[in-house]
Image: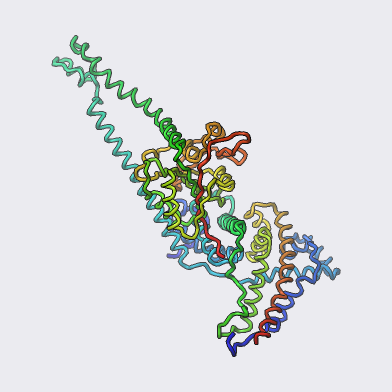
Length: 201
Length: 387
């Protein structure tokens, strides 16, 4: 059943107990949120769990959504906060988050099917960028993903993270500088991998 | 590596564009230039943009920096998007419907029980005390005028016998109907609190906090079931308070507060470890982290513990503080005093006047004071970090 209701009507319907309306909201935002969470965590399993938790928490707290902001901003805020908290918890326990968006170009990879070069190149670049993102400070990574990956405006980021716009700006340019430094460090790794492969051959 | 496998040279295989993007990132001056970033992000006013464009066109360093920012931006923006599981919405909607069904069942059961109790109460009252005018039913008379008078709702003329009978017939019943319930109602919360206090002060009692970080319905359901289905030696044991965060975007844990003895605690640990084999840890004391989390809670949901528990109709302001209190009378002054309001939206009870960290609901240890040993355990159920 297709419903083309605006966000406000869907939220109102959810509040009155219409679970189908909630399903529509989930369908509408799940992919976008999933991609963002995935970029913030770097881990598919964690992203799946956090996405479910985000929607479940949003449903339970929907009574408190006052409509002062967009529903998407609100649920985004929940997702980002959950993700930040999750990472803090994981890192606080001394564990490095397990990365499943990994470098596909693995010298020990024994698969017999070679990847097309262009695909491999893209994956390689994406993997390096993700690694650089993972290496960023949590605050920097969050603001960078929201800006570059999601294309949100400063004002929206400020609302989601509950920080002033000036802080968004400063975090953003620090994040970009930090990202460039990490990419700088990671890029030689690619060359190292090539050398290792050449030696193996 | 298998023979014959083609081994592309990454640097060679990278397009010129990608290579430039990666290598030229660090050629530019990393010194931040807020205007330049705002320009790239299209967050400048038209006037500022024109001004900056003019400046950049004459400044090769800034132009180089601008290019580096754009390249870095494009690298992140170009990361692939992934789709969430297509079954997610179906799974969530089903979980919500199950949850609502449970809530409705519980509500209907409660309302039904209340209605049955009311009917029973009325029935008993009617069987003991007549609800109609006492003059027509309690005072028997054969005087036809009096009966007519009663039917016309006028007072009959009492006979001397009826006057003599009246105190004996009415006084005890009126007393039991109007006076006796009042002190009983007033006593109930105090009595509950007193029982709780005695329970918590027993040497063998262990206060247990179960903090659940994974809020998926399956986890909560499994934990509820684990706690409820335990075999407790005291009916009051494992009485359960469920607490969640007051913030609409808060990420604090769901906290369960329980009391039980050491043996039961051991059983509970083992049961929880069986249900959540990868994600249970037990601490001997309430950590500061949880203490802070508990101090900031605003929603409290009271639930019955075991089927045998009979003490679950909580005085809302006292239940949680009792369940997690320290063994000192002094600390209770600082604790939260509030009233519970049931939310029509979900199954939580909101407690008014949320405390802050400056005014914690749980008192922190005071210097120079020694309390009896605190037997608080924390069982934390969380997603186990993958190694």
